[in-house]
Image (cartoon, rainbow, N blue to C red):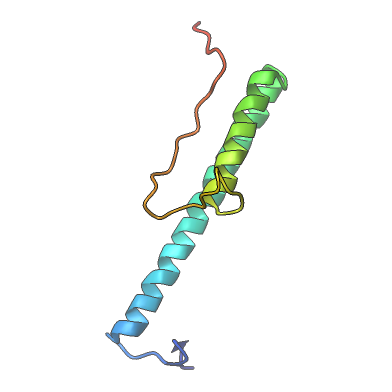
Length: 101
């Protein structure tokens, strides 16, 4: 069985095919990181809700995070500017109080 890449049989060290393989690998890696990160976030949210309850601080953090995610995914516009490859990604921060034990 021959593997087709870029519409033709795979040829070792073909630059176009090598670039296509690397793009596919980067995409798969990004998908894995997104899915794993979101699953970890869901676990944290579940733990928070079980321990504290769904409060305004959690709602604010999640709402801000969703807006950021939609902006960086190119789903929404922010002040008329769509995501640009030159922009740095923003970090999601907790806006509420964080108590010390």
